Length: 207
Image (tube, rainbow, N blue to C red; front, side):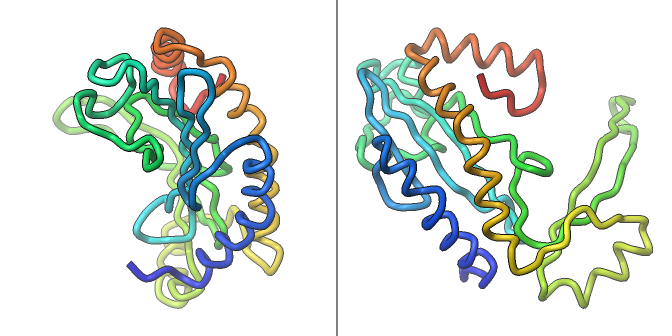
């Protein structure tokens, strides 16, 4: 899939402003997938496009315990599968974590519009409500902006020439809490406790 000019610019800024600090504390690998081996675990970080639409990315994290390979306690998505420690990525972990982002668990580097939504599932009769965010790239703006405004979407973020450095700063400011999470998860049991806490408190809780 071809990368947009905006995503290339965002990656360039992340490589310049965020990745060097991660290298200094032991993370290796090629962007967008980084890994760090400490004690009996491999810590994984990935910078991933949020959707096929473009305009946003997520920072995901997971931990693999290679000494428990072949069992669920490895936290591998496929516990019995063979793996190369130097090629592991965030998605290889079954229990995962990530940065909370700015909107909807992601970091948007283009214009962002939002709308409060509410609906009831006709089959289950369960009511849902929340806020829907839409990334609007420069190429999309001409085609969908009138539609968004007609449907009561409101502007949440206007991207300008400083958006990439602004987003990189947001990523850097959230990273210490995620690094603390890596420090605290020393065993698969710790990871299970984290998973239970996250279920009880929906959202991307970190520590």
